[in-house]
Length: 628
Image (tube, rainbow, N blue to C red; front, top):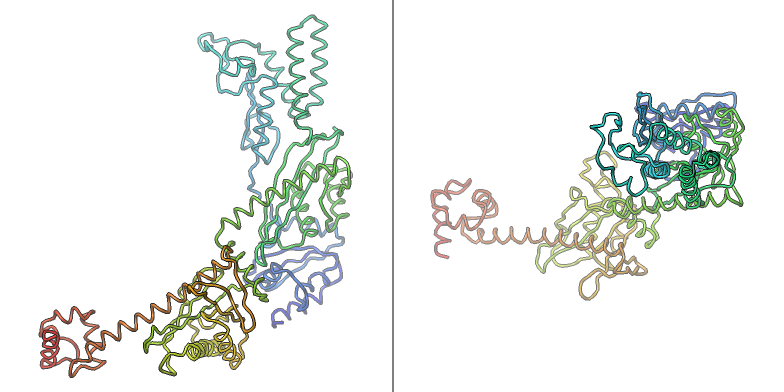
């Protein structure tokens, strides 16, 4: 434990055993997490204990905590309310945050002589009536379309100035001719009947189909008694349409029409140690009818499901004025009794949080769970399968499991030796970070301790030099990328290479997993190996493609360096064959003329301009290439 965490642990151990809230801050004083606790000392001290088995996300949060504050409350109820309030105010990075800018939609009844019913994105101060808000534009569109069809109200933008004869269109729109509009634009309905249809539509939107069906039945019977059979028939058709609409939506309507409740389901998928995706799905029921639904998606949620449900409920209902009688959950939640007390105080009536076990509530909950899982799977395709970064993390996770590594191989270094059957023995080191090649960390080594072709000897020298630089960096010397200890070392070779490198690292007291990248007879990647066994890779799998990419990259990098040295030596050898020209003058000539071809074409006076070249030597160089 670092001294900093030790100090935080000591501070936490001095906290009282009272309920309250704690506020975690980073080094800049920014609030990054707010939590509540029944006993502050017990809860906060858990964060800073060495033996605590925290999740990766919690460990990440704790690593950023520089200090914390706390507020003692008299009750757990007060702690809950205060926590919700402060989270809304400060929006800490590691809390569940329900975005305030989430889109809301309304159904609007305009304040015109001939009122129109339409959708609206914002609630304006225009004396119109607004029904909502709803979080789903799809839901608003569906309800609005059904309402306009049932009550034969217009969906067009035509004007209804019936007294201005010159403004009446000669023909109505298509909706009139297919029986979905009463034709106010061509004077087929009176203003009184039109306003009555709007009132019925409003009753349907606000009270549901049950109330409007009763109201329409009464009107139909009155019309029949008054021998207004045509009017009664139209009302009968409206009732039949409403009943048909209800039967089509039986899945989302309960037999108890007085029931107001919300359904909450949580779906969580852990992709790997560093990436988790969670979806909260909410169904809102009013008078036994599904009136709205919404979902909230979180990446890398800090808490486990039981705590996450508690935090979500606190944030979701914090600024809502309409609280349901019941909240159905798909699993347990922390602080259940306190949440019920808080919600009851907001509603003014008793509110229950329940986990349904059977009957209609359980069917509704399962439907909510299915929706949450469906959204989760869709988001996973977008966030993981189509996102290169997360796709690479998945490959690294698979590689970790195949090789039985203790941690995710985020920093991989691969080595290859190249000699091309000449004296230029070199090695290349390529680096892959989080699945991507990091070319600024690539290194090249020229073998110094021997002459000849000995891959084992060369690999041992390169690894020793690389990690000697790492040891130096621990003392604060120049880093140059060598200060990073890799999570995995890959060698272009087999068990012999692994054994040699492992012994070199042991001499330096370095402990890093080492595997060789074995090739088949066609020199293509075949498997990974340690000293004891091979780990075969399916050629259609992502780990195979990833290792193949690394092996090809380190091979390319090493050979290119070898070719650079060969070309350089070849040019030098052509010049050093000239009497009086050694390595220094060869270098000066190449720096001046860039290529051998340019030297061959140069005049004596041009050659003479090169540093260290006399007129006599310039003549000799000129004559050498002309005679050749």
